[in-house]
Length: 230
Length: 230
DNA sequence: CCAAAAGTGTTCGTGGTACACCCATGC
DNA sequence: GCATGGGTGTACCACGAACACTTTTGG
Image 1 (cartoon, rainbow over the protein chains, first blue to last red):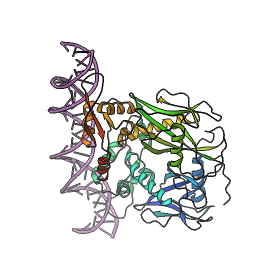
Image 2: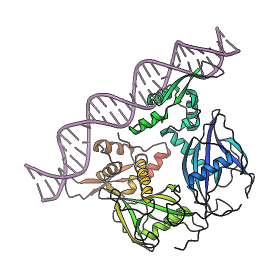
Image 3: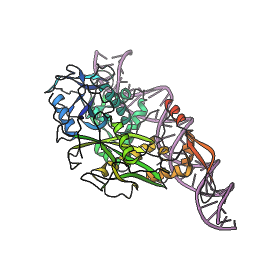
Image 4: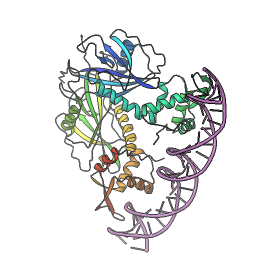
């Protein structure tokens, strides 16, 4: 078969972090290229012989120097032939979560700068990255209700109020504190620790942790995580 | 930027049909290439300047001559560098549903033969197409419970028993007939017609149809289609 | 009148929702 | 002692689950 194809393939990663009751995205300012100095998602071209996962992980390491907590393929963008002004590029987008309490981002080789931006207050993005980001936001919202991925945005030990705020913030919904706690605890996958978090005001709050092993075990037995609130 | 990339990009389509209480997949027997005479999914390389959607639709037309009822991107397969023995190929897989009561498949230009196979009785497939198919089956199972895509596998007018059998077959679950009917009808998106289907035995059954406009309207108002049964 | 599939209602239990007061700490 | 957030229990309602008999046709 004759095959003369010039389409290029890239990967991009939407990295979400949650800090101070705000959902943030990691963006990098490009050092080179036609879109120099524009903010864009972490990403780049796939190298010959590389798998898609290898490529994303390499870009995450090179451009941001981070290790993500959760990574899954999001969607492949290739319905706008001119999404990249240089030539036809198809981008396989990945969706990543980091527990980023004290994440140190080192703008590395390819990126001039790397920074967290609140998802609701973003600069203009390069390419069709705003579209990709919207898709990712929607995925996060959906997935949060039927998979325990919220824990991947929090530190290993967290306050119940933090978990609750995370859900309220991302789902853009008010949730009754008592019902939320009751439901989460009824699953038996979140456990109380002996430690307390240090808050400035009010009664000290216990730290909790997510028991992933137990979650996996229950899942095999047919348990379905689900925390939709009307 | 120097860019010397030799990875090729293809699209594949998993086309599901439902006939005689059986979930079927459309496969084609390849005319050319290293894998000549093996059964494979509909698919092929994306052409320069073509979007992904254009490419899938072209392949569907060229290889099977069908018009699908539902089409969505499934997943992009590129984590096995040798999934194609010829060279590195990344495949964007699409998920398609056809109402195939009397579908005429014409093996066209690129395919020697095209045929429906029951998903539970398949020949050995080329490439990693079995993996792709498994992913698609899972997606179908999940999506059936939270989106009204079952109707895209049935003729415009159908018997309640057909709808029920479709759900039972795909979900591999027994569902109580009375509860199923009650739940579907309570949504108000399936309407009775005046016509009757012709069955050989038993009491004649009314034909029903899915009111897509009403579904879209309700969805905008916050309605969520959901028919999970324990 | 028998076989085959269609059509229909009720009861019971679980789980979601709404809702308000006391508790422990720091200042 | 007051402000601040943490922690808990109950009553009601709605929906899902389980379940069996009657109806209409063809042979």
